Amino acid sequence: MKKNLAIAAGALFVLAGALWFLVPQPDREVAWLSPDELLADGIAHFESKEYDLALEVLRQVPDGRVQTARARYYEGSSHMMLKDYEAAIVSLESALALDPRSTGVLYALGVAYYKLGNLAVAKGYFAAVLDINPNDEQAKGLMDIMARLERASGEPAEPE
Image (cartoon, rainbow, N blue to C red; front, side, top):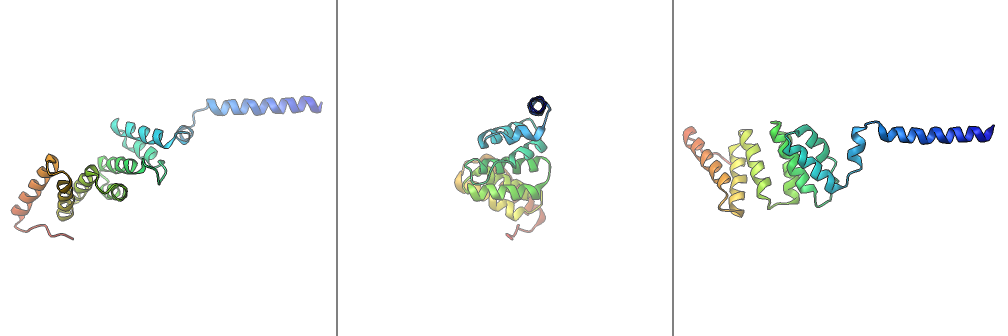
């Protein structure tokens, strides 16, 4: 009797384990990914314009990894696409701390501050892009736009 009970309990345990793998568990899939796979998955969601999913995945890239700067850049970019510029700045500043010469991060920070109406800070980030890459046409174009806005308002944008 005890032997049959032990066999039945063991079979039940195996069956429960098999069912666990068959039942969809969204968090389980991401938890098993390596940092490289998490980053690639987050970028894929970003490129598919699934910004909320991109944020969910990119937040799981562990800190202290080479991939962290890229993860924070795409996290910030996802916030930008969702028009949450304050959150974008937090993520992008984290990326900048890890990769201070990234023109993509500097440019994105400039855009975020521009969208928030802080032209002086935006101008500083675009100037930093141009210090690294004097031929960056996007940064030049936005610097020109801000110069026109300053002329139209009659006041230069003062740094904060």
